[in-house]
Image 1 (tube, helix red, strand yellow):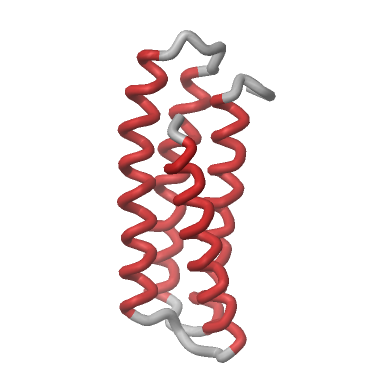
Image 2 (cartoon, one colour):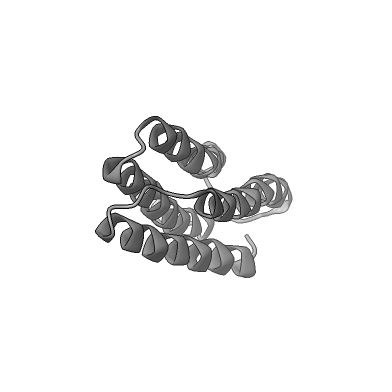
Length: 121
């Protein structure tokens, strides 16, 4: 796995999380620019899915392939699920759902790195 992708996902997600926390405190629903920023994160996650599958096929590491790919797919699905839920609930609760989705991405990314390292697979 590429370390810069991991760093980018975590940093972008934490920036989005901070922004969503501010929106929640201000009791404002997520705006178009928030969804645009989440789309950028999603593009990085899709690239990571493709790159991760390629890396898995080329590695000689002791990585549990099914578990690794399931985390790659799960992390790609987390944001769209949160976005659709948030669009259906245009209140502070919808913004909170987005915050949970972004924090889920961070948690899954950290777990993905431990799986790639062969720890706890």
